[in-house]
Image (cartoon, rainbow, N blue to C red; front, side, top):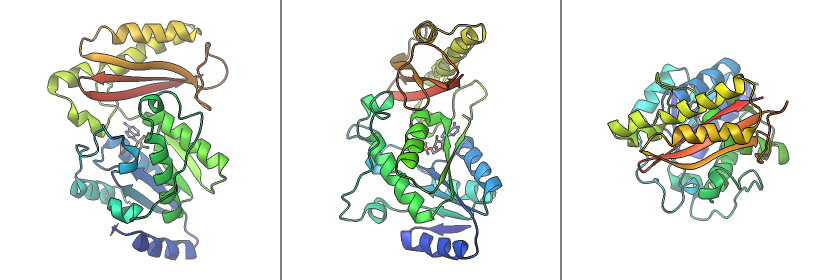
Length: 281
Ligand code: AMP
């Protein structure tokens, strides 16, 4: 597996591959890789001749009071995991390499970024859209892989690709969970043992919501109330939002219909902000 630290290096390999008519699958990550990331890399491996994994804690998607410095990093372990899964190249740039001294351009997706996580993380999605745009171009990717874990991100990136006519296919991948249901996340390492136990309330509350849906409930206010009540049973949990939106423009909706509905939650467990969701028809 090639380890590349510069944009020029990645472009050099990509140019060769493209000359041979090979397809390229890109998996953008912030590193500290786990089985959730692995599922994306495996999918990319199945569908493309070449697989590029980017491993970059992107500073522009963190707000001033967020966990940029604290964010966990272990590049040696990431390299092993990627090599073991048959990735062709891991791209591990510094912030200076990605942004240089003079970077004036941002990609902004409107409307879809106003609610959910965007409401408390105002700079986040501009940072995401800008960095993934750069990565799409650097890797000349034919496909890029994103987890449903970050459902708003997936919807925003799909919209950006649609609106700006990027020549790339966005592949969404299901949420990979721990045995007790907690969605795998690099940020789970912030949880104390007691908080880790409490964090299961996220997936448990969504399960209660799903049970009501399976029993025929279509009123989304009733469904989000069931989820909220369950979350409120956990003393260590503080709700940021429990929302039901359409999984296209991410606008609030009242009833389940034929279209995909995203039921998304964000909950503080102690100081750690955790997210989870289900998508239902
Ligand atoms: P991150 O490194 O947290 O920025 O995540 C990189 C990519 O992995 C994003 O597309 C995430 O949605 C995806 N991802 C993270 N955790 C999971 C998970 N538990 N299951 C599936 N995909 C995930």
